[in-house]
Amino acid sequence: MKRDTLWERLARGVHRLQHRSDWSAHVTADWPERIMQTPVTDRYHAKQGRSTGRLILDQGGRRLTVYLKRHYQLPWWCGWLAALWPDGAWSPALQEAQHLERARQIGVPVPQVVAAGEFIGPWGKLQSFLAVEELTDMLPLHEAIPLAATRLAPRQFARWKRSLIGEMARLTRHLHEQNYYHKDLYLCHFYIAREDTARLPRWRDRVHLIDLHRLGHHCWMGWLWQSKDLAQLLYSSALSVITPRDRLRFWRAYLGVARETPRSRWLRRLVLLRWRRYRDHNARRRFFGFLGPQRDTRSLVDVSSVVRSSS
Image (cartoon, rainbow, N blue to C red; front, top):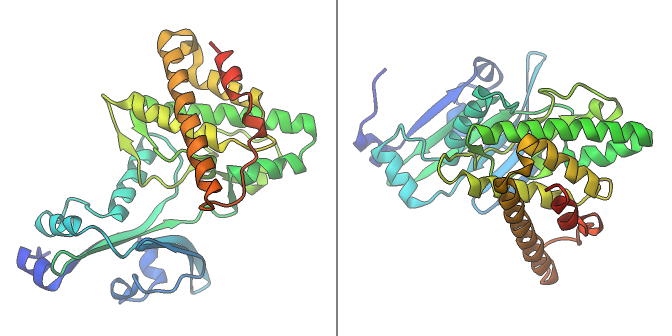
Protein backbone atom coordinates (compact mmCIF):
# COMPACT_ATOMS: atom_id res chain seq x y z
CA MET A 1 0.00 0.00 0.00
CA LYS A 2 1.29 3.44 -0.94
CA ARG A 3 2.50 5.53 1.98
CA ASP A 4 1.48 9.17 2.16
CA THR A 5 4.13 11.86 2.03
CA LEU A 6 4.91 14.69 4.43
CA TRP A 7 3.48 17.14 1.93
CA GLU A 8 0.20 15.21 1.74
CA ARG A 9 -0.05 15.19 5.53
CA LEU A 10 0.63 18.92 5.71
CA ALA A 11 -1.35 20.20 2.76
CA ARG A 12 -4.22 17.74 2.31
CA GLY A 13 -4.49 15.78 5.54
CA VAL A 14 -4.54 11.99 5.97
CA HIS A 15 -6.00 9.49 8.40
CA ARG A 16 -4.67 6.51 10.35
CA LEU A 17 -7.38 3.91 11.05
CA GLN A 18 -7.68 0.52 12.72
CA HIS A 19 -10.81 -1.55 13.32
CA ARG A 20 -12.20 -5.02 13.90
CA SER A 21 -13.74 -6.94 11.02
CA ASP A 22 -17.27 -6.65 12.43
CA TRP A 23 -17.02 -2.85 12.50
CA SER A 24 -17.08 -2.71 8.68
CA ALA A 25 -20.24 -4.81 8.64
CA HIS A 26 -22.09 -2.24 10.79
CA VAL A 27 -21.02 1.03 9.14
CA THR A 28 -21.19 2.49 5.64
CA ALA A 29 -18.19 2.71 3.34
CA ASP A 30 -17.78 6.45 3.94
CA TRP A 31 -17.54 6.10 7.72
CA PRO A 32 -14.04 7.65 7.97
CA GLU A 33 -15.44 10.93 6.56
CA ARG A 34 -18.47 10.85 8.88
CA ILE A 35 -17.25 9.39 12.17
CA MET A 36 -16.32 12.72 13.78
CA GLN A 37 -19.80 14.15 13.11
CA THR A 38 -21.98 11.03 13.52
CA PRO A 39 -24.68 11.64 16.19
CA VAL A 40 -24.45 9.19 19.09
CA THR A 41 -27.47 7.26 20.32
CA ASP A 42 -27.48 8.42 23.95
CA ARG A 43 -25.37 9.23 27.04
CA TYR A 44 -23.74 12.12 25.23
CA HIS A 45 -21.30 14.30 27.14
CA ALA A 46 -19.06 17.04 25.76
CA LYS A 47 -16.30 18.99 27.47
CA GLN A 48 -13.20 20.93 26.48
CA GLY A 49 -13.02 19.89 22.84
CA ARG A 50 -13.90 16.24 23.38
CA SER A 51 -17.07 14.16 23.63
CA THR A 52 -18.23 10.71 24.67
CA GLY A 53 -21.46 8.86 23.98
CA ARG A 54 -23.01 5.48 23.31
CA LEU A 55 -23.50 4.47 19.69
CA ILE A 56 -25.80 1.55 18.87
CA LEU A 57 -25.32 0.10 15.39
CA ASP A 58 -27.88 -2.33 13.93
CA GLN A 59 -27.17 -4.11 10.68
CA GLY A 60 -29.08 -7.10 9.36
CA GLY A 61 -30.42 -8.06 12.78
CA ARG A 62 -27.00 -7.86 14.37
CA ARG A 63 -26.27 -5.21 16.97
CA LEU A 64 -22.96 -3.65 17.92
CA THR A 65 -22.90 -1.21 20.84
CA VAL A 66 -19.84 0.94 21.44
CA TYR A 67 -18.79 3.92 23.47
CA LEU A 68 -17.43 6.54 21.12
CA LYS A 69 -14.79 8.99 22.35
CA ARG A 70 -13.90 11.86 20.03
CA HIS A 71 -11.23 14.52 20.38
CA TYR A 72 -11.89 17.57 18.22
CA GLN A 73 -9.30 20.04 19.53
CA LEU A 74 -5.82 18.77 20.35
CA PRO A 75 -2.67 20.85 21.02
CA TRP A 76 -1.02 22.26 17.92
CA TRP A 77 2.31 20.63 18.77
CA CYS A 78 0.66 17.18 18.72
CA GLY A 79 -0.61 17.91 15.22
CA TRP A 80 2.80 18.90 13.94
CA LEU A 81 4.49 15.91 15.56
CA ALA A 82 1.87 13.63 14.00
CA ALA A 83 2.60 15.18 10.61
CA LEU A 84 6.35 14.65 11.02
CA TRP A 85 6.17 11.18 12.65
CA PRO A 86 2.75 9.76 11.69
CA ASP A 87 3.29 6.36 13.32
CA GLY A 88 3.91 7.85 16.76
CA ALA A 89 0.29 7.64 18.06
CA TRP A 90 0.23 11.29 19.16
CA SER A 91 -3.53 11.38 19.72
CA PRO A 92 -5.38 10.35 22.92
CA ALA A 93 -7.49 7.82 21.01
CA LEU A 94 -4.60 5.77 19.61
CA GLN A 95 -2.74 6.06 22.90
CA GLU A 96 -5.69 4.64 24.84
CA ALA A 97 -6.14 1.87 22.26
CA GLN A 98 -2.51 0.89 22.90
CA HIS A 99 -3.02 1.07 26.67
CA LEU A 100 -6.04 -1.22 26.47
CA GLU A 101 -4.06 -3.77 24.45
CA ARG A 102 -1.16 -3.66 26.92
CA ALA A 103 -3.50 -4.15 29.85
CA ARG A 104 -5.10 -7.11 28.11
CA GLN A 105 -1.67 -8.64 27.44
CA ILE A 106 -0.80 -8.60 31.14
CA GLY A 107 -4.11 -10.17 32.12
CA VAL A 108 -6.26 -7.18 33.13
CA PRO A 109 -9.89 -7.45 31.95
CA VAL A 110 -10.69 -4.34 29.89
CA PRO A 111 -13.18 -3.36 27.16
CA GLN A 112 -12.38 -4.44 23.62
CA VAL A 113 -11.25 -1.87 21.09
CA VAL A 114 -13.60 -1.95 18.08
CA ALA A 115 -12.17 0.94 16.06
CA ALA A 116 -9.73 3.81 16.51
CA GLY A 117 -8.13 6.43 14.35
CA GLU A 118 -6.60 9.84 14.02
CA PHE A 119 -6.94 12.52 11.36
CA ILE A 120 -3.63 14.26 10.71
CA GLY A 121 -3.60 17.71 9.10
CA PRO A 122 -3.88 19.83 7.23
CA TRP A 123 -1.39 22.30 8.68
CA GLY A 124 -0.99 20.91 12.17
CA LYS A 125 -4.60 19.96 12.83
CA LEU A 126 -5.17 16.69 14.71
CA GLN A 127 -8.38 14.89 15.66
CA SER A 128 -8.98 11.34 16.88
CA PHE A 129 -11.67 8.86 17.87
CA LEU A 130 -11.89 5.61 19.82
CA ALA A 131 -14.79 3.13 19.82
CA VAL A 132 -14.72 0.52 22.60
CA GLU A 133 -17.25 -2.26 22.95
CA GLU A 134 -19.85 -1.59 25.63
CA LEU A 135 -19.62 -3.67 28.80
CA THR A 136 -23.21 -4.75 28.32
CA ASP A 137 -25.37 -4.87 31.45
CA MET A 138 -22.43 -4.02 33.68
CA LEU A 139 -22.26 -1.35 36.39
CA PRO A 140 -19.52 0.79 37.93
CA LEU A 141 -18.76 -0.22 41.50
CA HIS A 142 -20.01 3.03 43.05
CA GLU A 143 -23.45 1.98 41.75
CA ALA A 144 -23.09 -1.80 42.00
CA ILE A 145 -22.08 -1.93 45.68
CA PRO A 146 -25.13 -0.02 47.01
CA LEU A 147 -27.35 -2.09 44.70
CA ALA A 148 -25.93 -5.33 46.08
CA ALA A 149 -26.63 -4.06 49.61
CA THR A 150 -30.34 -3.92 48.73
CA ARG A 151 -30.44 -7.25 46.90
CA LEU A 152 -28.52 -9.44 49.34
CA ALA A 153 -29.15 -10.38 52.95
CA PRO A 154 -26.76 -8.63 55.41
CA ARG A 155 -24.53 -11.65 56.01
CA GLN A 156 -24.49 -12.53 52.32
CA PHE A 157 -23.64 -8.92 51.45
CA ALA A 158 -20.72 -8.99 53.90
CA ARG A 159 -19.37 -12.15 52.22
CA TRP A 160 -19.98 -10.57 48.80
CA LYS A 161 -17.95 -7.49 49.73
CA ARG A 162 -15.16 -9.57 51.23
CA SER A 163 -14.71 -11.64 48.09
CA LEU A 164 -14.98 -8.60 45.80
CA ILE A 165 -12.38 -6.73 47.84
CA GLY A 166 -10.01 -9.66 47.44
CA GLU A 167 -10.31 -9.55 43.66
CA MET A 168 -9.94 -5.77 43.53
CA ALA A 169 -6.79 -5.99 45.64
CA ARG A 170 -5.41 -8.79 43.45
CA LEU A 171 -6.14 -6.88 40.25
CA THR A 172 -4.63 -3.63 41.54
CA ARG A 173 -1.55 -5.38 42.91
CA HIS A 174 -1.07 -7.29 39.64
CA LEU A 175 -1.21 -4.05 37.65
CA HIS A 176 1.34 -2.42 39.95
CA GLU A 177 3.65 -5.44 40.00
CA GLN A 178 3.94 -5.07 36.23
CA ASN A 179 4.92 -1.39 36.81
CA TYR A 180 1.70 -0.16 35.23
CA TYR A 181 -0.37 2.54 36.93
CA HIS A 182 -3.91 3.58 36.09
CA LYS A 183 -3.61 7.20 37.38
CA ASP A 184 -7.40 7.52 37.58
CA LEU A 185 -8.20 4.58 39.84
CA TYR A 186 -11.61 5.47 41.25
CA LEU A 187 -14.42 3.04 42.08
CA CYS A 188 -16.37 4.29 39.05
CA HIS A 189 -13.69 2.79 36.78
CA PHE A 190 -14.20 -0.77 38.10
CA TYR A 191 -17.13 -2.55 36.40
CA ILE A 192 -18.99 -5.75 37.28
CA ALA A 193 -22.02 -7.52 35.78
CA ARG A 194 -25.40 -6.43 37.12
CA GLU A 195 -26.29 -10.08 37.72
CA ASP A 196 -23.32 -10.37 40.08
CA THR A 197 -24.97 -7.95 42.51
CA ALA A 198 -27.54 -10.62 43.42
CA ARG A 199 -25.23 -13.61 43.96
CA LEU A 200 -21.82 -14.67 45.19
CA PRO A 201 -19.76 -15.18 42.02
CA ARG A 202 -16.21 -16.34 41.50
CA TRP A 203 -14.73 -12.92 40.85
CA ARG A 204 -11.60 -13.92 38.98
CA ASP A 205 -11.62 -12.05 35.62
CA ARG A 206 -15.13 -10.70 36.27
CA VAL A 207 -13.99 -7.24 37.43
CA HIS A 208 -13.15 -4.95 34.50
CA LEU A 209 -11.18 -1.71 34.38
CA ILE A 210 -12.12 1.15 32.06
CA ASP A 211 -10.73 4.56 31.04
CA LEU A 212 -7.08 3.68 30.63
CA HIS A 213 -6.18 6.85 28.74
CA ARG A 214 -3.67 7.79 31.46
CA LEU A 215 -2.17 4.34 31.95
CA GLY A 216 1.58 4.58 32.31
CA HIS A 217 4.55 2.25 32.70
CA HIS A 218 7.06 3.45 35.31
CA CYS A 219 9.98 1.44 36.62
CA TRP A 220 11.85 4.13 38.57
CA MET A 221 9.09 6.42 39.86
CA GLY A 222 6.46 3.75 40.36
CA TRP A 223 6.02 4.54 44.07
CA LEU A 224 4.69 7.99 43.14
CA TRP A 225 1.97 6.63 40.88
CA GLN A 226 1.27 3.68 43.19
CA SER A 227 0.40 6.07 46.02
CA LYS A 228 -1.75 8.14 43.63
CA ASP A 229 -3.77 5.07 42.53
CA LEU A 230 -4.32 3.92 46.10
CA ALA A 231 -5.24 7.39 47.36
CA GLN A 232 -7.76 7.84 44.56
CA LEU A 233 -9.34 4.49 45.35
CA LEU A 234 -9.46 5.34 49.04
CA TYR A 235 -11.05 8.72 48.37
CA SER A 236 -13.70 7.26 46.08
CA SER A 237 -14.71 4.65 48.68
CA ALA A 238 -16.79 7.21 50.62
CA LEU A 239 -20.00 5.17 50.41
CA SER A 240 -22.15 4.48 53.44
CA VAL A 241 -22.08 0.72 52.77
CA ILE A 242 -18.25 0.64 52.71
CA THR A 243 -16.82 0.46 56.21
CA PRO A 244 -13.36 1.14 57.67
CA ARG A 245 -13.03 -2.63 58.09
CA ASP A 246 -13.57 -3.06 54.34
CA ARG A 247 -10.74 -0.59 53.64
CA LEU A 248 -8.46 -2.36 56.07
CA ARG A 249 -9.26 -5.68 54.39
CA PHE A 250 -8.32 -4.23 50.98
CA TRP A 251 -5.08 -2.79 52.36
CA ARG A 252 -4.01 -6.10 53.90
CA ALA A 253 -4.94 -8.08 50.79
CA TYR A 254 -3.11 -5.62 48.55
CA LEU A 255 0.11 -5.67 50.57
CA GLY A 256 0.04 -9.35 51.54
CA VAL A 257 3.02 -10.41 53.63
CA ALA A 258 4.77 -7.13 52.81
CA ARG A 259 2.47 -5.11 55.06
CA GLU A 260 4.91 -5.24 57.99
CA THR A 261 7.86 -3.78 56.10
CA PRO A 262 9.22 -0.22 56.45
CA ARG A 263 8.32 0.41 52.81
CA SER A 264 4.66 -0.44 53.41
CA ARG A 265 4.52 1.90 56.41
CA TRP A 266 6.05 4.66 54.30
CA LEU A 267 3.57 3.91 51.49
CA ARG A 268 0.66 4.11 53.97
CA ARG A 269 1.73 7.58 55.12
CA LEU A 270 2.04 8.78 51.53
CA VAL A 271 -1.37 7.37 50.58
CA LEU A 272 -3.02 9.08 53.56
CA LEU A 273 -1.28 12.35 52.75
CA ARG A 274 -2.54 12.28 49.17
CA TRP A 275 -6.02 11.18 50.28
CA ARG A 276 -6.25 14.22 52.59
CA ARG A 277 -5.20 16.46 49.72
CA TYR A 278 -7.99 15.05 47.49
CA ARG A 279 -10.49 15.46 50.31
CA ASP A 280 -9.50 19.04 51.15
CA HIS A 281 -9.20 20.10 47.50
CA ASN A 282 -12.66 18.83 46.63
CA ALA A 283 -14.14 20.27 49.82
CA ARG A 284 -12.88 23.70 48.72
CA ARG A 285 -14.32 23.25 45.24
CA ARG A 286 -17.71 22.37 46.70
CA PHE A 287 -17.56 25.38 48.98
CA PHE A 288 -17.20 27.62 45.95
CA GLY A 289 -19.92 25.75 44.06
CA PHE A 290 -17.87 23.96 41.40
CA LEU A 291 -19.01 20.45 42.33
CA GLY A 292 -22.29 18.86 43.25
CA PRO A 293 -23.60 17.89 46.68
CA GLN A 294 -21.20 16.89 49.43
CA ARG A 295 -20.14 13.25 49.37
CA ASP A 296 -21.02 11.03 52.30
CA THR A 297 -17.74 11.26 54.21
CA ARG A 298 -18.97 9.85 57.50
CA SER A 299 -17.50 6.44 56.74
CA LEU A 300 -14.10 8.04 56.09
CA VAL A 301 -13.75 9.62 59.54
CA ASP A 302 -11.68 6.74 60.90
CA VAL A 303 -9.62 6.02 57.79
CA SER A 304 -6.31 7.15 59.27
CA SER A 305 -6.69 5.18 62.47
CA VAL A 306 -7.93 2.05 60.72
CA VAL A 307 -5.16 1.99 58.10
CA ARG A 308 -2.59 2.75 60.81
CA SER A 309 -3.74 -0.35 62.69
CA SER A 310 -2.67 -2.49 59.75
CA SER A 311 1.01 -1.87 60.53
